[in-house]
Image (cartoon, rainbow, N blue to C red; front, side, top):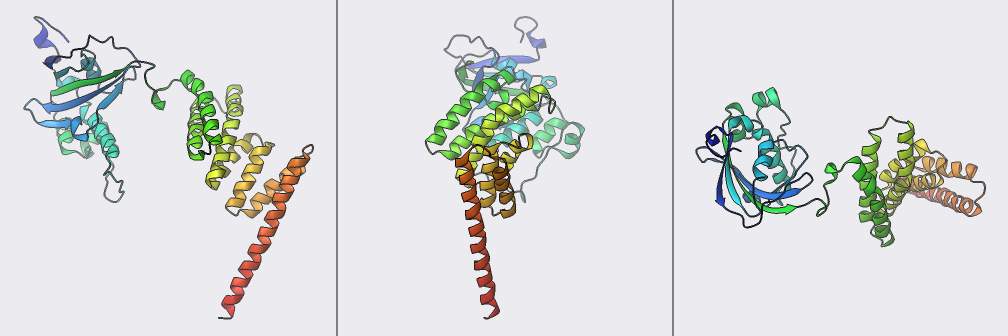
Length: 335
């Protein structure tokens, strides 16, 4: 922004409505700010107002927010300040697309929101397609087709400096993800030991997502990829165990199979997958896993005895189920 004789040429003009009482803030990357915004046209027509959603907007600086002029404006404000910024149309050409995303976000946060595929029309288009098909909002479509300058009234209500808040996961860099993985594992272990299996699975799942993000940047089966794959196996095992406790047997099968694809001799993964197969009555698959274990366990008599017992119980359950089904069919024949 420009002050003095050339101010009239500035594409952003600021008018302070209510001065903040706090000192000027030294804004920096990774700082999160919370603010309310009101978007109006030059004739005063309201386009968007965050207050009607009763939840402020938030931005974390340094992550290329699509509406760059907002960051420029907000960085001139004090905490508690209310100011209006008149912004030239050349700087707000992306506003319709950004506003649609903001509206969609707020809509999903509202308690009364229900997702109904039969009545909710999705608009995922950009550029020339957006001009042709529209964004699904008449006011935004009009601004897109007839670009105009806009006024933004901001109230800066909260500022969190780096380290004062937990970053949204999508903002974390690779090093931050690597640092958080062991912390998430420990938190998951504590929750599991407390019998909070769903909460523990959530912690393990977040750590596994970080591994997934890191592995996607490596070439499959290269040294670094294999190292990450090895490091995530204990977390996968813990996640599988949580899924067994929660009765989510198909999820347990899927994640145990992920381990066995790269480590076929992993005894815990094989045993837990067999248990999950029994849970969904995949009898033949369960037998294959149990028999594999019996054929490959050489020096653990306790585990051999456990697997043999599980296999015997499976055989007994299979016989009982056969008798029950036979009796049921027999009864139908004579009714």
